Image (tube, rainbow, N blue to C red; front, side, top):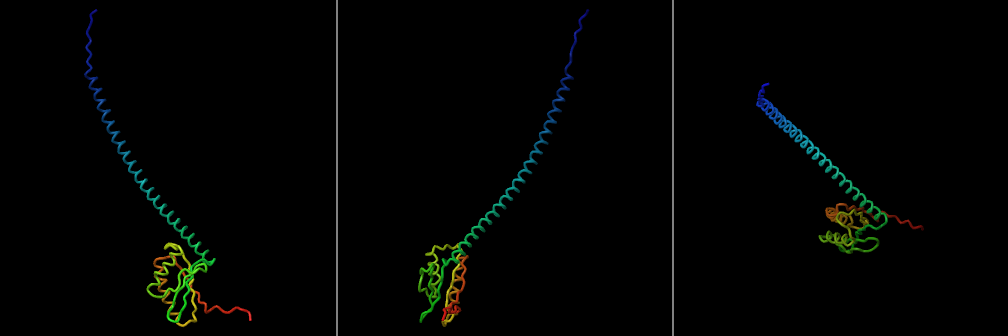
Length: 191
C-alpha cells in the first residue's frame, strides 16, 4: 500500500474564521454603541427626574418654611393677645398740661417713660421705651392709647400721636393700638 500524503489546506478555514471574527467584532461594536446610547438616554432621563425631584423638594421646603413662619407668627400673636388681655401690654397715656401735650408709657402699672412731648423726639423716645420693655421689631405688640376727649385740643394732639405711631409702625410692623377715650366712661358709683 502506498502511502499517500495528505495535504491539508487550512487557508479557507482560516479565511472563514477571520471572517467570523471580524463579523463578531463588528457586531460587538454595534451592540456596545447601542448599549452606550441606551445608557446615555437613561442617564439623561434620570438626571431630568433628579432635577424635577429637586425642584419639588425645594418647593416643599419653601412651603414648610412658610408654614413654620406662619406658626411662629401665630404663636407670637397669641402671646400678644394673652398679654393684652392680662393687662401686661404697654399703655400710652395722652395728657395735657397748661403748655403742651405729653405722653406717658406704662406697662403693668410701672411707668416706663414719662413727659414725652409730641415733637420730633417723640418717635425716638417711644422706640427707646419699647426697647426698655424688651420689645423687638418683629414682635407682635398690642397697645392702648388712653386719652380724655373732653380736654380742649385733644383732637389735634391725637392726630400728632397717630402720626408718631404710624412712623413707629414702619419699624414695628406688628404694632397695633386701640384708642380708649375716657370721656365716654360714665360714673357708675351708686348715689
